[in-house]
Amino acid sequence: MTFLSPTIQKTLSERFGTRLKNNVSLAGLTTAQVGGPANTLITIQNREELAETARLLWDADIPFRVLGSGSNVLFSDQPYQGIILLNKAKLIKIDTNIPQPTIWAESGANFGLVARKAALAGLGGLEWAATIPGTIGGAVYGNAGAHGGNMAGNLLVAEILQQGKEPANWTCEKMEYSYRSSILKREQIQAIILSATFSCSPASPKTVQDQMQQYSEYRRLTQPPGASMGSMFKNPEGDYAGRLIEAAGLKGKKIGGVKVSEIHANFFVNSENATAQDIWQLARFVQEKVYQQFNVRLELEIEPVGFTPEGDFTPQVSNNQNNKTASNGRD
Ligand SMILES: Cc1cc2nc3c(=O)[nH]c(=O)nc-3n(C[C@H](O)[C@H](O)[C@H](O)COP(=O)(O)OP(=O)(O)OC[C@H]3O[C@@H](n4cnc5c(N)ncnc54)[C@H](O)[C@@H]3O)c2cc1C
Image (tube, rainbow, N blue to C red):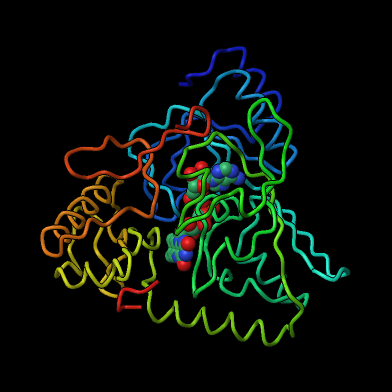
């Protein structure tokens, strides 16, 4: 079953062939391995196609959302009534022949791979990003960060497409970055990230790779393996969400198939075929307990899609791109 009109379905099927699929489980496309079926999924191969498809869907007033690696988005178990554009646009170009070397990448490129390619080319600056398990698009959108670095510290420009406009280069300032957020995320602006350019500095490949190796080892020692979304909550000012959750005695707390990691309390691990509802309920539970004990209202870092806010749980609940309105708990 599809919500698309027969005409649109025909147009899209002719355009994308087997890259268009109906009724696709989002659990297979998200790192927490949860989520209901997407009505329609289109796999995008490059930035031109991403732009072209977004324009087509905007013009036809069809709801859609770009999905990168699905490592920061929690889809509900209900069907997603729209089109998911699975972003596999992953070209990477490195320019070392100018005073200020740069790296350009399409938004579906894996951030870690971009950082590792930079290292091989003798460019430093993106070491912190080597272990981020998401795409450039997701990282630009959410100001991904780790080990003291973040997108705001490296982005030169993001190429942004908005409905009815030509693609435009948005500077870092225009992205108005804040902790794990951007103007696109905060204000639910209808926009597609097509590509991004980063500033880097010349460095010895070995030095850069050694640093990446250290970060990677730190992660291995302090974060749990298994299906998760990384940190569930943002760190509150001056504290760590993981420390608070642990201090509330919630390590190991389980709802359905998901549990608060024993290794890092801000990670919820899907250990036994959890549903998105299990994760949602556990997030609500943890937030409430931490609030009761410490009077701190934890704010979600992950982005829920398709949930209804209830009671005191006040996460950001977004809809779609079309009509968007260490074991000590450190990251
Ligand atoms: C084990 C683990 C560890 C993690 N560690 C970190 C960490 O150290 N630091 C950190 O910041 N995050 C971390 N994360 C979270 C996550 O990896 C990052 O937030 C990442 O940047 C999300 O990228 P993504 O491609 O998975 O985005 P998705 O989850 O696919 O999408 C996130 C949001 O971005 C939007 N979006 C994605 N691409 C585009 C685009 N091209 N145009 C417009 N909108 C777009 C989506 O629509 C969605 O709203 C971790 C996650 C896991 C599972």
